[in-house]
Length: 189
Picture 1: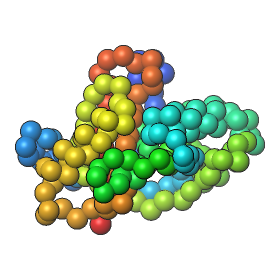
Picture 2: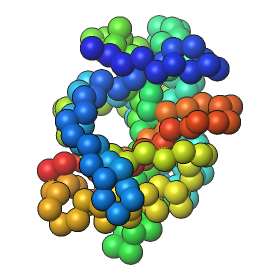
Picture 3: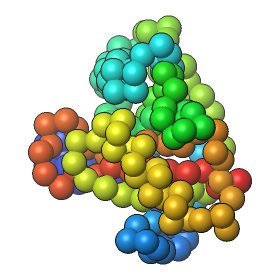
């Protein structure tokens, strides 16, 4: 039921439960349509900073939370991906606000520890269907914006998805130099 991502630096990391519904390729962009389970997520919102700086700040807070800075003092383990909600302007650039999320590991879904940092919220989310495209490297704002534009172009006007935000997902720790996995997700309407 839950995917496990093998990572030679950290052992196994629990993946977000998603199932591929279809695959496509258009204009040299490979993409998938997937359905992803809902559940509880730890989230941090940061506004007034550039995407890369805001994302890093929020991720560090979430890593402390899953590492044991919570009311139970328990290290829960890492899940993947780290998901950054980006809010595009009409010109495709990103607004200076992000919402960074980690899915709470399955064994803590029913009763997640309370965060020690008040900027971390626990949210219940519904399942969703998404369109995704994947790319490698150390992803920055420019990469996510470029791959979002490629995915938008590949999907054309036939696909209905949310235009007010998209998800920028990273699956790997920063110390992993090769074969990195990043994705852009559009949430289907």
